[in-house]
Image (cartoon, rainbow, N blue to C red; front, top):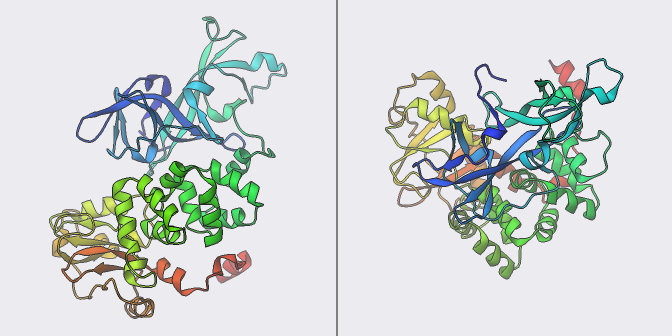
Length: 431
């Protein structure tokens, strides 16, 4: 853990008000949602169960939490108001972990009953330089008494010092399978999923959280994407499509029957649906059809420090983080007039207070949305680019196309089903 990173005991969060960036109250925390891991690795905190003023309980991902401060939780202001439904891999921290009987390990005591303790509280802490949170400590009471027992020594121990929560190494459920594969990259997990039986694939996909499933769907062949999406409840399918990159969501929806496509677009958040509809208006193998509508956009009076803060966002791909696009307002695509690009290396060379408008690369012409795939590939090869702006005739930035999007469309349709073998020996000897 990072020195000085705040540790919060979850009992203090129960009933805590949740605010948006403008100071308006969204609701109150009613529980926390965590995912257990194999062995004694600390569980990852997925999000909060927030009760709105209407008494509806919704799920607020930790990626939408910008701060947990004294007596309040601050969010990005973007809240999905669909009702919270607990999934097989999820555990409610207040509802399922507190007051549970567990066993201390590593005490050297051969009498297991003397090691039994009651969980009174657990603490969460944010990982260094990331938005991920983990449950790291457990506050317990020794003795055989239950919830209302007031006697017995209390102590706080590391998560690894208790036994009775974590998954078995060889469990057969989707929960254990997912915990085992947690460290896999989305492309590798997609490969595992592709080779499972249809029934097992559906079970595992249903148990993944929305963001993880979205990442995995982007790496699967079209047939698998359509099969998995078709097995989800429509509201869940819409949530997953919202979590996907807009260009990948547009490609997937384009493969569905018209009535299914329109029904899912209607269920999506209006802003996300608008981005996808805009992309679906372009031919698939053009710059407009391949671009994402969510590049990093800054105004010319933003500083290098502002740009680097945006580049550091964890959910950005390396290609999208390689440069920022400077435009007149509005800041979201389609923007005001596109002024130029600032590459990541340039951001590292200039002082933090430098205005991005003064260090633009405006010599390179942007791509038009109708630029064909061969021309886009030639552009990337000629100028050694990993991402490029797409600008319309009026000069507005529509989005950005990344090198991985170009490769996806240049490779054969079945390239994801090809087995790629990377020899570790080659990496060692090559060094």
